[in-house]
Image 1 (cartoon, rainbow, N blue to C red):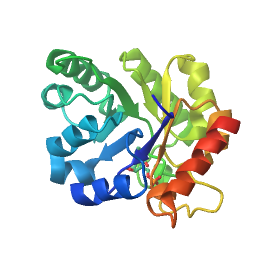
Image 2: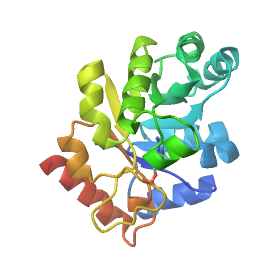
Image 3: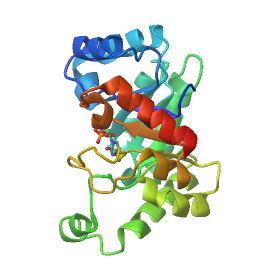
Length: 234
Ligand code: C5P
């Protein structure tokens, strides 16, 4: 993959996403397609991105009963994307079902399967007071990462700050994909557990996901280059 970071194409329509890519000369860069764009544009958007050479992380965060997730993954598997994901909180049976669905539905390569541990927009207070998870957030992340590993998925989505503990628990080859990435002068927006590209690299992240620090920047191409430089010099 060209650069190990996915630009989050959080746009309302295919036209907006395509205009963004072409106006800022980001043809062929790895991209992440999430619910907002996929629910409107679906396969057509993915086909367009593939035809234009973009590696794709399809971020739909499936979380349902195992049978439903298996069948949904079967249907997603032939899109030809590189990575798909589920919520680890769905449990071992659900993660294994997702894997089965992908293997059965893939026409060529089987997409990598990763699981969201605890969303990077979540903090300790919310975890304790809304979800009644009483352990420290880091423990919850570690537990969900181990469950993902035991379910034989390829890795997790987590905050950069949790990468060292996850690598220590699940091994160096277990993938860590980290959203919540911000350049020093970018706003945190609704994210809580953020890190700069340089820090994420130093902490051992395999892939970064970067949305608004690039897509909402005054000069997206310049910020893309800053992320590249931070990563290369990190
Ligand atoms: O704009 P920003 O860089 O915060 O975008 C982060 C992207 O990563 C969003 O598309 C969001 O849905 C996604 N994401 C996340 N936290 C996760 C999993 C995915 O922020 N745990």
